[in-house]
Amino acid sequence: MTPSLRAIADQERATAKKARASWQMFTIMAEFIEATEYLSEIRPAVCIYGSARLKPDTPYYDLTIKIARKLSDAGFAVISGGGPGLMEAANKGAHAGKAPSVGLNIELPHEQHGNPFQDISLRFRHFFTRKVAFTKHSDAVIGMPGGFGTLDEMAEVLTLVQTRKARHVPVILVGSKFWQGLLDWFRTAMLPMGLISQTDLDLIQVIDDPDQVLDAILAFYEEHTIPPEVVEESAEVTQETKQSDGDRMFSI
Image (cartoon, rainbow, N blue to C red; front, side, top):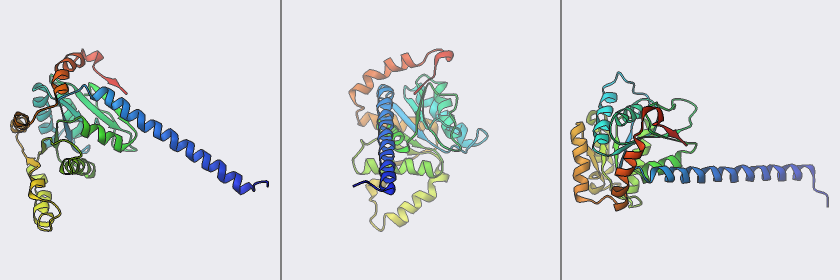
């Protein structure tokens, strides 16, 4: 029986849709593979989340630079979203320090453009592959003030640690005035209803001083062990990655 024109059109449309879906799966796999290839050797590392909209004339921008510089000089690579605002501040502080400055950039229709302070720059099309890269390769997470994106990223980390789908790492919120309302809501709304426990709240530290941020991370790892491969690779990668300014950045 000869198929109708509608059946032929639907079949062609279905084939094209399957081809697009298959190609998308390959791009997702490629992002996972490339991120693992580059980031697995950049350890120990600290991820800094924060708003793209806070500019250099804001106090949190300067504070982020100071924190990132202290972390970098202490031997921690610093990973940010690679964009402007507080992401730029994180990369800028790390770029001036001793350890690598890493940016995990995302393709967006607005806001996101890569900042020039990245020693290693990776570019993602998919948010979820980027979030996996952040979480998998960070030995501590710092949340600076930010919007929905920052809240999403911090909630993701807390959920993974809470459910033991990710290893326990320090989770530090910087900007007590900014975060206070959210933390109060956790305590007065979520905790009494049994939606979270006190041990979940204990996963979060609120620290405003750059020296104390570094001290908190170091104190955590005096009691908890960083995986052995992280320690072995860290010094070698730091030496190789910190090259001359003309040859500092490479991109995926």
